[in-house]
Image (cartoon, rainbow, N blue to C red):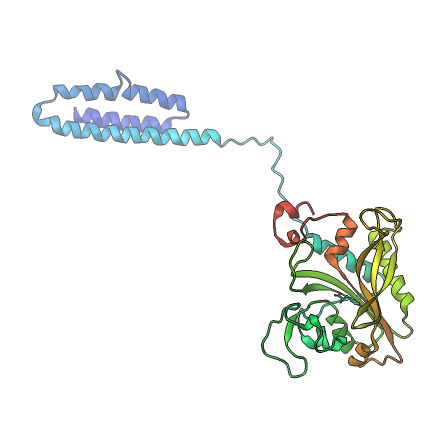
Length: 340
Ligand code: PHE
């Protein structure tokens, strides 16, 4: 009788291993455990087993039962999973998501291209810089508020004997000094880089980008500045756009201007967005003679112009994007970035 049970078990194991679908498996289960299934019958046999063997027979019965039940459950699981994983080679493939450049990288490339085409060379300068290059050599007085650490991030407590403490460049104008100290005129450089200021609200981020142009040569005057800015405006924003210079003050340019661009909504006539037809876009001016002198350039022989605008703002003006909070640009939230 024991042997019958063992055979029953081995036979069932063999059958289960051959099973191809759930219906077949269910049939095996019924054949074993149904009302008159083989196992059911074998367990009823216990009444005919001699008393001395009953206990052992019971143990084997239990062992066979749990083995077979386990086996059936395992196979059932396997077949159900297999049923879910199906493969249809005629289905179109899933599209892989291709990443793209961040909006600011696109803007930087486009801005660089406009200036490179008219003979500007794209340069790179330190973003962790000495105070002297960011302020001192740019004609900022010692007590200018921008040099306060509420405005600027100072990063080093050790102070250079000549160049002062170190900081994160608060504007790209430090590149003017680096450029003139390492290259003699004629100079036509464009510097597009990160800037850092202690600011954070819907229209300001602590890290943003500026593009700074510097031209130094003989006989450079305001018309060259105006022509360059107009060329940029027309190439970057469209042929109908123009720029306007408004008197302003910067330490390192004389005269200094704020630059406006004609509004694209009303074409300069005046509308709700711009009020008077112009949108403010950045700073510019003729390089201050003191700045030229600080860099060993003779202001009697050479003159120059410089301009510095925000990359994010300029690009948003072009694309017509209105981002409700500029900090979203750097939040690494794909739901936002995919739309830009
Ligand atoms: N550095 C100035 C700023 O950050 C902009 C500027 C650059 C103005 C060059 C004049 C010339 O606001």
